[in-house]
Amino acid sequence: MIKPSFAYKRYNSAKHRFFKQVLDDFLSKTLSRHFGPLLREKLVEELIILFDKYSPEAKNLRPGQVLWTALDKSTRGDSPNRRFVPVILSLITEEDIGELAKGKPVSKITEKSIARIINEAYKQGGILSNRDISLLMLRSTSDTSKRRIQYEPQRDVFDKRA
Image 1 (cartoon, rainbow, N blue to C red):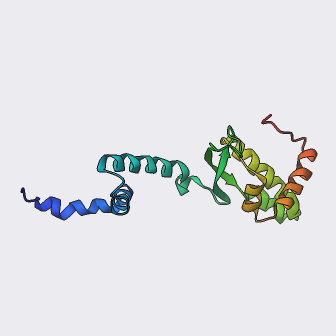
Image 2 (tube, helix red, strand yellow; image 1 turned 60 degrees about the horizontal axis):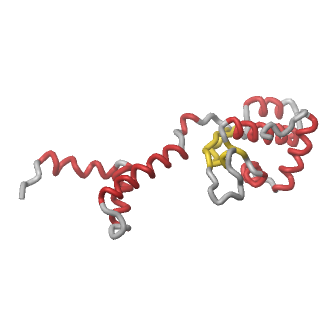
Image 3 (cartoon, rainbow, N blue to C red; image 1 turned 135 degrees about the vertical axis):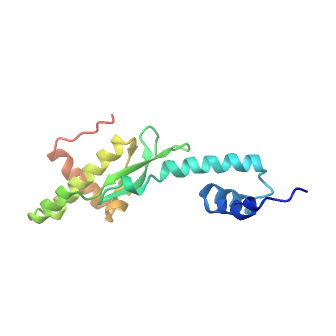
């Protein structure tokens, strides 16, 4: 047997600090009977692709924004083959804060924010359900639905997806 070099002994274990190796080690330890090294390597690569897709870097988010996983706009919500897309939504903007400072009612800012996040999600390839909106706004689904219904006719908003 060939003895490992000094450099190998000293530095090889450092690779265990990187995400790819952590996933590989995890699958090797927990599911060693199910995956050989080649299948495990392919699975790790696919998991990293999914992770990168669904977790963009935080530097891409501005204050007041949140990352959300929305239903892909070309997928039905009741489909067994639903697809999702990550979207960045602006829950609050500098403009909203300025309007609040001028005394505009929170209810009006909320209506505008709901319309904004619906449009932002759609432009990024996703759609938000009433449940999504209520979770993001920490309000009941009936409240967010009522606010959306109040906002749309006042602004001549119609369903552009049809």
